[in-house]
Amino acid sequence: MALQLDYVVRETSTNLRRNVTLSFAAVMTIAVSLCLFGTAMVLRAAVGNLSTRWTEDVKVIVFTKRDISQHDKDSLQKSLEDNPSVDRVRYMDDKATMKEFKHLFQNNPAMLEEAQKNPELVPNSFRITPSTKDPDAIIALTRQAETKPGVLKSVSALEGVKRLQHFSSLIQTGILVVALGLLAAALMLILNAIRMAMFARRREIEVMKLVGATNWFIRVPFMLEGVVQGMVGSIFAVIGVYVLDKLMYNIGSDNLSVFSGMVASRGEVNLVMVVVVLLGITIGAVGSGWALSRFLKV
Image (cartoon, rainbow, N blue to C red; front, top):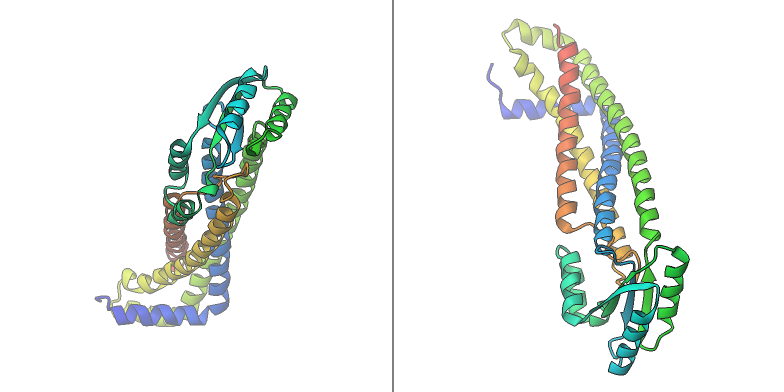
């Protein structure tokens, strides 16, 4: 028998209505598990982007006011260079700072536009590489620099970023473990939903087989049922990932914060969303295919 689109759609919708409770449970389980999976991926990308801000052994950043006088800037630079706890000092002017900002937020047009309107969001700065790894000395250097004339803010991330990376790694592992467990539960829910649909229509399937229906003719509506459940669940998960990205964007948009830059790029978020949708469809197809291989014996 040749498959017809109206037949497939009709049979799939009938199966979904007959198993509405199980279908809803499967969709929500897929949504939660994939949202957790997407959260772990976005968090990983955001922490990676945060780390790039502190590359080249930069441990302290001293942000200066836009209207800082040349005298105050020279005095600040000399005091930093003369400090025994400082190994190297590099000044980032308007062009260098904006170039770095554009690189960090290249896939966030809204942030770039805001920086163009309000240059105060991207202050000039001194990038300092300490000569010591003593946390107390670095904290003292940070606080001392903040008291100088013309300084807007001084931040250090020697230990903070390391703790954040370690904590993020633990969180990601925990989230992924829970997500995998929920994905396994979603597979079983889809399997049971397909099994119940086939059991409810066992007589009809027997008649279809007797009149010459192939296994694929019978399988397709049931497989599409699982795919629809996986797709709907993944759409809810994508919404959750989008909301998470916006929350992280608000946290990382303060350029004076140690967490500035802790945002996933638009390309990274889009990739996570695509992976989530594809994974949802795959889970639905695998769950329904597994059920069919086990229970299509009429």
